[in-house]
Length: 216
Image 1 (cartoon, rainbow, N blue to C red):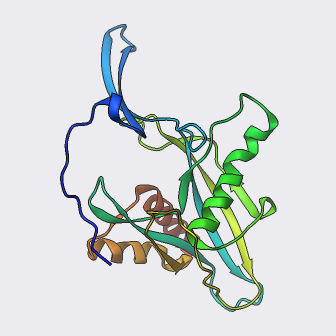
Image 2 (cartoon, helix red, strand yellow):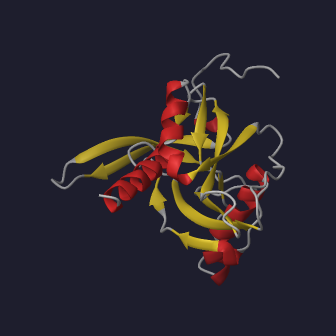
């Protein structure tokens, strides 16, 4: 397998972009002054994607306590950084239907689909522990928003490593990490030259801090 790398870059006109566009925003600030802002905006691809995404935090548990509480992270090459990035399983979900009851379960269903595709682990709507409100991904740069879906996957006994089924063109490495060792594992990735996704590292840091405070 070849090593992925960026071959070249060039300016991209919005008229020729498929998935992302640039938008100029004219707004008025708190002092009444008119200002301009530039941002990136994900385009809706009819029948395929909406503008917002889901990230999945997976709780891997054993019914017999055969292994410590663990989670799943991914290694994936990201061209904008020209680096392998360590991140949660994630994906973009279809647009809502305009206030119907189905809108509430579109993100959770999309999360379960992405989890199975990218990691092989299966879960149901009943296995969803929590779903965050819609939150901003990078509000100074993009209109992109997301939800974090927390899913419990309970295994009968020992750790299992199912076969993922990524989309064509996706090259993903699945890693299972003990939750108690997550922050250290991410720091080790950083030392090896990987880039860690901010949301994943924020979660790991918060979990590590909570454990330290609990044990004081």
